[in-house]
Image (cartoon, rainbow, N blue to C red; front, side):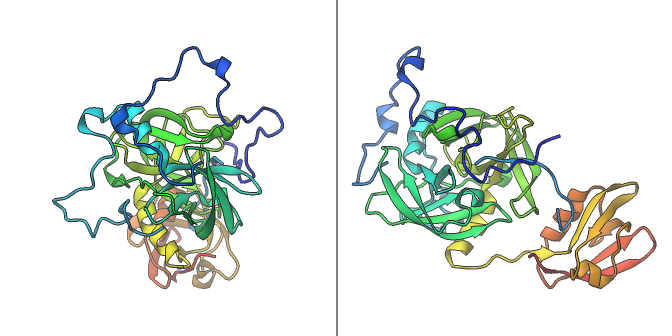
Amino acid sequence: MTDPLLWLDGDPTEGRRPRPHAPRSEARTEPLPAPPAAASPPRRGRFGAALAGGLISAVLVGGGAFALGLTDSDRPASSPAPALVSPKQTGNVESIYAAARESVVSVRTNGGSGTGFVVDSGGTIVTNAHVVGNATGVEVEFADDETARASVMGVDTSSDLAVLKVDTNRPLKALQLADSSTVRPGQLAVAIGSPFGLSQTVTSGIVSGTGRHIQAPDGFQIDSVIQTDAPINPGNSGGPLLDATGKVIGVNSQIASQSGGNVGIGFAVPSNTVKDVIPRLERGESIQRAYLGVSTQAASGGVSIASVSSGSPAEAAGLRVGDVIESVGGTKVSDPDDVAAAIQDRRPGETVEIELARGDTVQVKLGVRP
């Protein structure tokens, strides 16, 4: 069972271990190899460096559509976005890191730190909602250690995503977003971030699962999450999880752990969710999601209602504690995740039919998630 520890206030090891900005030289057994010249462009610029259905436990670790392509609708189907590494370098972790590192930043607030990455040349940066918390502005540090201020343009706690805007004349290099629906277990996964304050740290592994569900900071469920065994730790929050071509397949957000450290089970919010959420946050939208208003638990023959929120659509429709839900919208459900997913796929104001084991079929007009 995982401890529901939230890393909202920075490094949980603060005060118990040093947080150097670079590895100690004496810890190296050999010099680090220089990145290939073709993959490491010169530095430029002045700046450098589940209430709807059921809850699960996990551990939190820690823009618009421009050059990165937050949406693919403006790009002809015959002209896919180029990979960040050449065909000969595909799958080479050193080349992937060299091509992506300038786009990855450390994010610092008064309460903690995390990671972010540039998604367009206009200064849009993606990170986790739990990294920025309630801050209206943050400091970002680029790969060459120079810093700049960034404004928090929008936060969506239900997807654990936030968008920052950095005001700089520095030329910015954007990362490309992949289509996360094509990600499969066994594929290469490369994470870049600032675990324990060690900026520009790269780790690698594989995609070890897809279609996972994790709990967002507001207690609701995030769907279609990517699981990886690439080591990620506190401070990696908000950083990119990259595929073999250097494209972003997810935003590193949580790990499953009993000790608070990495045990090879990490979770990333999928890039397709980023494509949906970030442009809306940049436009100033308050993202609204459907709300039923129950918490649930597994039961024989369906999913049992453990609680009904006061004033919720569920209460108004007559759902009661102890009711066993057999189907939602005509789809059979067998665990709390099924109920949560069925509600999340709908819009506020939509009416959904819920079939109960007591023989009743209830019509519920969904509300707006609080």
